[in-house]
Amino acid sequence: MSTFKDLGLHNDYIKSLKELGIKTPTAIQEQAIPVLIKSKVDFIGLAQTGTGKTAAYGLPALHKVDPSKRAVQALIIAPTRELVQQIKKQLFKFTKYNSKKIFVEGVYGGEKIDIQISNLQRPTHIIVATPGRLVDLLDRNIINLTHINTLILDEADEMLSMGFKKDLNTILDATTKSARNTWLFSATMPAELKNIVSRYIAKDAARVEIDRESIVNANISHHYVKSSIVDKAHTVMRLLEDREEERGIIFCRTKAGTQSLKQQLQKEGFNVDALEGDMTQKERDKVMRAFKNTNLQILISTDVSARGIDVNNLAFIIHHQLPEHIEYYTHRSGRTARAGKKGQSIALILPSELNKIADVEKTLGIKIKELTL
Image (cartoon, rainbow, N blue to C red; front, side):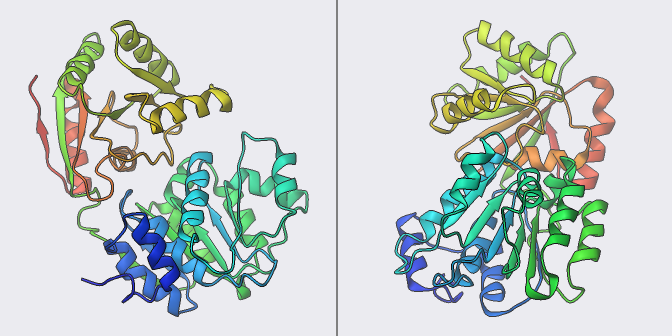
């Protein structure tokens, strides 16, 4: 097995990784980092959620920055405010022992744009951004992208499923193709994403696929529980009672369903709160802070609201309903079993939905066993 030194990382970064407790490269890091550090290539990396993609592209991007130049040299696009903040924080930790400082700024919706414009007046080498806010800044001519040498799309499939296709096209068109390399990282490759790849990424791009025969993380066990519409809340309570020391996320398909389940569980004394699209950013941040610092045990969320959430040590996720799209099952399940740990994915289904379980098994190459309460 390779070490980070074998991959070509500078000693300053190896020292930071060691301090963070990251001693051995994951599969995507082992295959991506040497290629991205040593070559000027477009790149496609396909790997499940939670396999260390941030370090796989973040460390090479840092290597390619010239700290003596004040220009923005790398641009990282991610689907949500939470993921942007997480990436920025991770890059900051990676550069702790650098002799020359590399400056990273995050731009995202939910914060006053004037504050972010002011921050961008400082020396900035890397920008991490959500698509919508970046397009706003481009429209105002606030950001100069002419010196970009690396453009990274993280969680690319999620950005498309959230409706950011037009914004992504705007951003990709605004950066000078001849002067940059584009690195795309994703868990899945839906048809819309293939269209972006064919339009914006070189045909000879380097490509790494990790465990593609098993689209879902192999450390996740999959189960379903038969229930009825009226008994679903009670079934969830039974599952949570059996896991009273564990933390997890419950996924609902609608905002109304999220709030309804939250009220039912809180009434029974469970330590839960919810994320859904009608919440203000302040309310959302409050819930996420509580969940990340473990004051909140269980998070209930819609698919869109949970995009980009990266919280360690989640033991399980529960599908209150199966998702509309099978790729959402991958994203939901990927919230657990991160950093090599084990996790459990449990779907509540009606007796009439057994055929849907069979479809998920066939499409994702997994076995979903019945769980009896």
